Length: 150
Image (cartoon, rainbow, N blue to C red; front, side):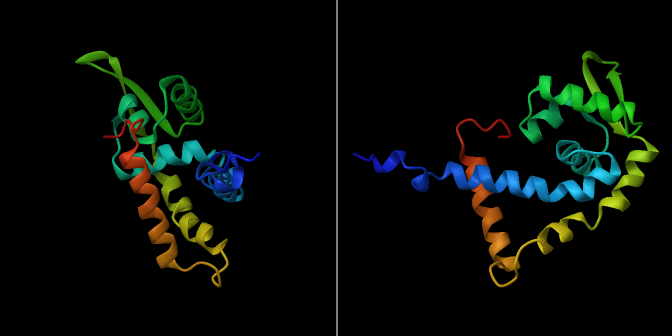
């Protein structure tokens, strides 16, 4: 006997999960030539918006734990995209700032969001659909009991 709430086709989590994976894969051909991964790209988006952020702020914004974020930042530092400095007032805090190379990457990435949207069939999606989807996903993120952004 089937239990309707346990059928995959009735789950909200699966289409969100699968869509996330597909969309993340769409970024690969644009980010790979630049030598960065999708999670690293997200860090750049934050730093291009506001340079000089502490690690805990980045983790909070991206919903990433320090054990995931620290190696990611270390690789960006090794590639000379960012600098990590201890904050003088609080040695436990680490500030992340863009290097010249990291700032120059912004220009190379400016068309990526448009290229991602071009991957969607305009017969099936229009900008209003994408905007509505983003609003719904933002509601999910902002109303989740597990959300740490609040």
